[in-house]
Length: 332
Image: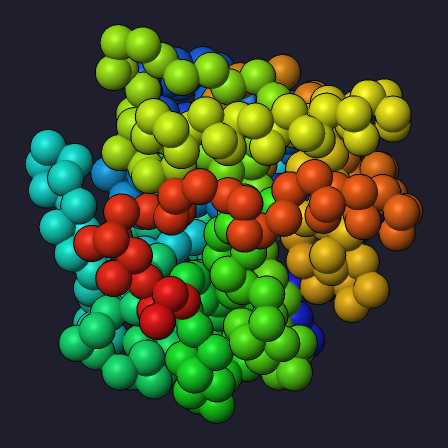
């Protein structure tokens, strides 16, 4: 698989990586055996960037990755780990923690759960509004110096925060939602990343399933995504109609709508070689379905047709509810 380097200080990684949250209950119950098989299928296919967080399943996802890694797998795998998201015993989100002491303590627990002596990219999941980003990044930099971390990343932060953090220690990449439906990174944030030599790891490239071309709203209210504005009633209808407008372009290339949507994200970084995509999966077949997107190089004409079919202004609903958006430095 094609690789791209995450910034000037980060590792070279495949253009498509594996996101682990769905294996640990984000979208409903998941079987450990399926998760282990999915991780192994990804590694065998060259999808060796694996993204996780210590709060995915309250440590479960890190444990699952440890179980999945076979002899020799760790050496060829890039582990990207987020920290700082706080949960209570019932799994409820209760805040963000970025104090230096927490950075080092969380890292110690992650190393233990993952069964490794280092993490390739370590990043705060969200900006702690009560702790200067310089202090958080400075603490990770100490762990880089000690050999426990290889590179430092950030997640969902804005341009000013990127500059402040990068002045303390080189930042390898910014993990942020980016898709045909979520394009807030375009302009200030993406320009700043490129100015500073910071890569972009895009998550939510299928807009939590809306852009798969197969999503249909649940009628019994059981969908765990029902709290997201884009999945509400009329918003969902509008957005699914936009997805259908992508189908002719997908069929013309003999690919699925999901593969087209992934390829669109990768195309945004082709000139600079600075954007990679994370694919959430909890079964091996999802890995196989995503792989062709890595080889799908869209022409300028195709990109223009996609842009015409799904202009950013036509998407209905924000990506999160207002209280959640207020917690994102990238939305300020």
